[in-house]
Amino acid sequence: MTPISTSSNDRERSQEQLGFLIEKRVTTGVATINVKEPKMNTTTTQLPTTENPDWGFWGTMDNHADKAWPLAIKIIGQTTGLEPEAVRAFLDSRYGRHFADEVHNALFAKKPLQQAIETTAAKWMRYKMRPSMLREMDIPRGLPYLTSLIVHCDINAQLYP
Image: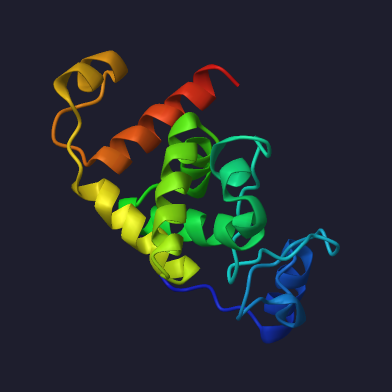
């Protein structure tokens, strides 16, 4: 079988008919027909805001809330490996209020805000869940206390919005 030879004019014409013009080739990105499509922001992530401004972590942190909230979301998320939305559910809960109480204790001991949150997170990671809490919350044995509470709060937030 001999190969069919086509002239370059024939090739260009068939490429044009199929939409393969060299001027339209994409070599560095993804082509889109929607010119006004928003660009994806990969450098920053939007942190969730509180849904419980009167109580929980936010309400307990009072004057420190504006600065403490984003720090707590990031630090707790990094410490536990959990998503910001799950951490938000925890911080908005009664456990978030208790967490804020311990952050206040660290602030009273003259620790800077970031260190106070880091210290509290590390402390809560070392705590152990009581067997009765494990049964009540249906949390698997062996998870750190802080992680267990965040998972519990996240599940409840999804089940009972």
